[in-house]
Image 1 (cartoon, rainbow, N blue to C red):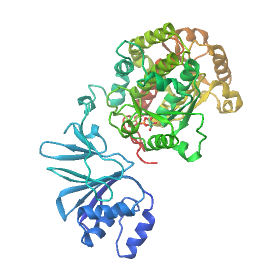
Image 2 (cartoon, rainbow, N blue to C red):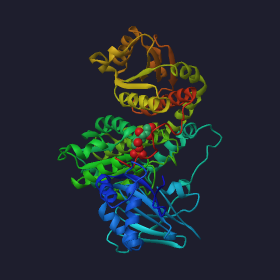
Image 3 (cartoon, rainbow, N blue to C red):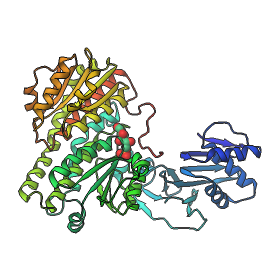
Image 4 (cartoon, rainbow, N blue to C red):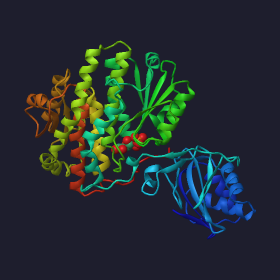
Length: 521
Ligand code: F6R
């Protein structure tokens, strides 16, 4: 980027033009010469063609939009109209910033917030002509349309590293605040946990579909343990990219919760739209206010983690878990599955979480030698049981995406069904263990891995650590009830991945091949 055609039109594009091959063949037959193999370049040539045919910017955009299929947010500059940018979007996000004497375009408000807090969000199939003096927004058919000018919160502004070496390190340290603020968002004016929807609506919830990708998907998998055990409401967790394409049977579910830090993951957005089309009511659980998922969902549950810049999710993950646990408690209460005393007891425990996470943050120095050893491994396994199983998946994802060490997470009890064949001398096995109802079974699974040569790196609470006398390294966090252990144990799992990546010298905040928000399928 940018892609330039005929030295006249330059474009930048986020998304995929699905029918670019046929467009390219048509244009090549007309004499257009392409300089790349990308789908994006056809946009530049289509605009040249439209301008050559005498169309003005608005008519040219309508004609281009009528021809392309796919997801896109793009911006066009032409030497014919030097005071103007043309922008358009479908599915991929795009925000226009309105300044005092300039206008700006960006993929979201965060990118613009050091320039202006006044933002216009385009809807799907909108296009806009952007000049320094203002923006004119149109629907795909050329009909002018007014889109609201939104004033975004100052906290959505760009942030610096605050003295930390990496954004990720800073964001790991921001977790006590992220959890406390997210808890506040889930507390009503009477000081009780709330699901931010009416009791009537909550009472009507019969089955819940949790839709998400990546780390957010692992948060939903943990939440399933909470919602089913506390509220006795059936839950399915769906990988968003699979959901709408596999023709799911939806009759038993009437609520879909799309969980997304960015609120822009295209897979999650599309899955939420599919759930809405199937008649479900929708909740968007997002960290970015005014994101597309937030704007389209019937109800918003906010995480208040603040801007997350590091590509690997950290504080947004523990904030998502906090909100999901609060939601589970509020649902269970309304459904009559737990009494006030139990709800209050859990609430008090969550209130104590920021302090406990703060203590877990002191583990950095102690974990450096462990990370140093792990950094020379070719492969690592992560094991957990119960709600710590999805945390094992998340721990493995953090390690592989940051340090490029191959890592797999397994349910401890599954080892004997196949994965134990992977255990060889000295393979690191990161074990997530808490003093809960499955601790003894989980510990037995770990002992078996250890007996076959696995080097156990134990991440556990203090009580569980006492049970394990075979670990090579023991990282402990304070004791906490089993409901909260996935949130607290997430912190050392993040620190381990972070420190290992630092040891390996990888690009921690921007790992290779990854984007912070994935706005293509
Ligand atoms: C991993 C990570 C990704 C995201 C995933 C979903 O550390 O950050 O796996 O969790 O791309 O992103 P959101 O939550 O923005 O929808």
